[in-house]
Amino acid sequence: MPLQQLVLHFNDQFERQHGLSHRPFSLRHGAVYGLYPPLQIGSVLTPIRQTVDTTKLLGHSAQLCLMPIGKQRLQGEALESLLGCTDIPQPENDLAIINFDRLARTVHMLNFLPISHLSGGLMVNVDARHILAVKKDHGAYFEEIINKCGLETKQVIIQVLINSAYSFYQRQLDEGLQNYRHCGYQLALRFDTPAVSKITSQLIATLAPNFVCCSARTLKTLTDKKRREKLQQLLNATTSISGHSILLNVDDQHMHALAKNMGFAWVQGGFYEQPAYSTAAQSY
Image 1 (tube, rainbow, N blue to C red):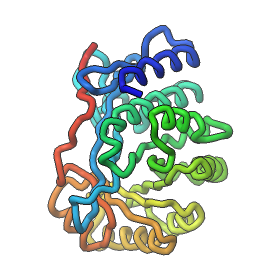
Image 2: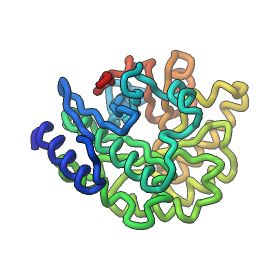
Image 3: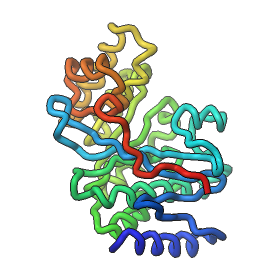
Image 4: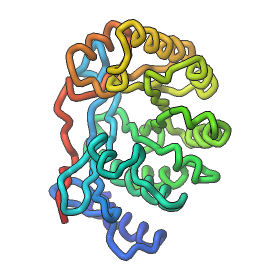
């Protein structure tokens, strides 16, 4: 189905299901945007490359490009600073979490569709709060969106950030992630490197994800010795389950060399290309 028709279809579906008073999706200059007042949502799709041969792609990583309507585009830390929080958005209830996450993932899928034939798959973040908010059939709603785009769930990697709060809800989160896996999705667990511990290895062994990720940006606070110890522990746990490792946000030569020396299978980040915004956020 042409992209314009898909945008119309999902506008009708979201309006009907969520009782919206606005059309949540728009197509401009070949890119799809989502509207979640007071934010506009776009996608940054960045290649995930093989470390030893960066011409080979695993797929693309999808990141949110958010902008308060009428203001400058914001990402990552800049947006968190503006909102005064580490998670976005700052919802008041479970329904707000679910609606935002579904809107964002739909934007990502629609922007991925034109390049899907060139890419192995798409890695999307799923907020752990979303997994807790959905009580059953995790991934079923997203599966309908994926199928409507003419794609399959096996082309999508569900990435979840694992932090200290995970242990308080481990049973519910484990069940949710297993539900995604039963639907055919691939699974990626992302860890902040300073927090890697014995519990990390146990969790990797229990969930057996397809991919284990960490961000190069979380390595900056560690000494070189501690950095290598933590990464080696993470890589050993990944190897023990025959999983694949990804070092994200590789922005310079030093981190690229570290990824190669440590044996990361895949890398992603600005060192390999300036991220090409598939949706350049603009004010309405």
